[in-house]
Amino acid sequence: MHTPSGNQPWAVLTVPAFQDNYLWVIQNGEEAIVVDPGDAAPIQACLDTHRLRLTAILCTHHHADHVGGVQALLAAYGDIDVYGPPDEAIPGRTHAVFDGNTLSLAAGEFRVMSVAGHTAGHVAYVWQNRLFCGDTLFAMGCGRLFEGTPAQMLDSLHRIAQLPGEFYVHCAHEYTLSNLAFAMTVDPDNTALIERGKREHARRARGEATIPALLSEERATNPFLRAHQPGLKASAEIWKQSPLPNELAVFTALREWKNQFKV
Image (cartoon, rainbow, N blue to C red; front, side):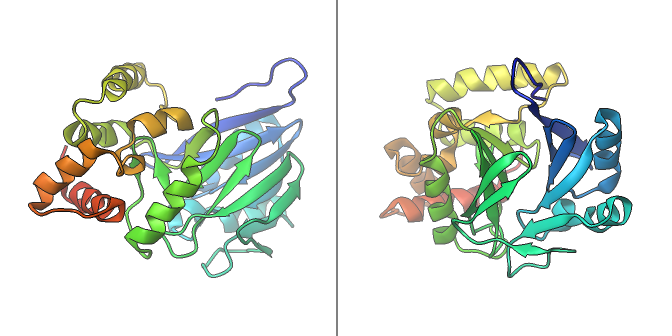
């Protein structure tokens, strides 16, 4: 959880839900914006605890663990603006958002990024040095391709990777240790990955969230951002048992491998 300091009136509050989801509450003074409220109850508890007034809901995509609490929040808090991608079933959506849009909200400006792949219309929200990316990028992983193509997901990850390294990645699941196990399998000689693995295991042993993650660390340790690297190419070719001619082919093989990977 980020806490306010000095003249900084805002905080990003981490709200655990279900088995491994993270929902996000952006606090600005006494106002709050919620990102991907899959479950209303923990969001309501957070708002009550911090005495916050809900002013907007941002949705990255249509899956139930991201939008399942929207209607209950609307019933509890009244006429709230709900933002989400236009071609996905977002409950109560009042504003469709498109790539490049800038939303002027209580906590400041949010820039919309199209990051298709996990779903066809998936978006992310960029606010200050924070990226709320739903199920597109995870710590040392990326989302499954339920609706999009490998090319779409790789393009989305390229777009994210171009953001400044000091950005914090607020993804939606605590998948870090399982993703780490896969990353160590496909990229075993990566010293940055080995060191990160020690830190992440220690954090989980203390019961701490591993999210948000620094984008600079993702660039150095996330195999899905490193499909252009020779070592990842070699690993993917051994698993695939065939040559892989380009980064897209390597990425596709890595994603297929991860789908079958057992920790």
